[in-house]
Length: 305
Picture: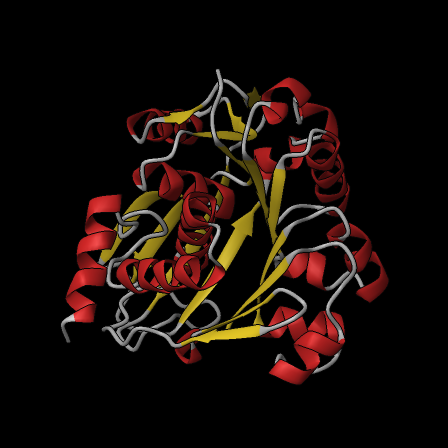
């Protein structure tokens, strides 16, 4: 099946547990609420792109268990192509998030089936027919292989640099980035890689070889977009923050969908910032991801404020 955008990476089940207060060592407490929600950066990204009206597929692995079935059902319901999702004989990846009434939390993650994703699972025929492939929180060997294959077929490529890649060291990260057109990272990851703060002067001075665009998310300070020649700052949209999980995935999806439509960095970034703001008003990595109609209506509302 031909799709325009492919997400590559983790598919998890997010187990969100609400408690009145976080437990101490050896303490048993009662959960006030528990939610089981599909998640994982690349999975959220694929669903976000599909909701924005773009034909989307996913490359990754789920386990042969109940969570794996739920994730596949969710993909199909969201019109994400699952022809390249591999079902493996181990547990589906999951993340347990326990948060208290003050919004403090801790997380326990298990990669599970996600660890079974191999470079050979990156089907060249599938990739060659796409307009863009996007990797999120990939291991180094997968990230390198995806970038090389996209470049081989002249397909746009993007990557969201997670903590795993950011901690590898500058030379190895820069080697990964050489084959990517768009690079998404947050302020902390930028500092880890370049050992400087993400300000205009540094973005231009240390712009890496290979990428066309760097996008650095700054939380409530908005986002910086740099193409090596100029830096665009797009301020954040002020909304009530309920849950920031998936905000970066909403941002990346909207930016790439609207860049493919307009080829305008500033327009795409404005849609991306609005998509992230829309998402953080709902709990769960995917629950608040906007449809195209919702996002464009939200932007019209903002323009009248």
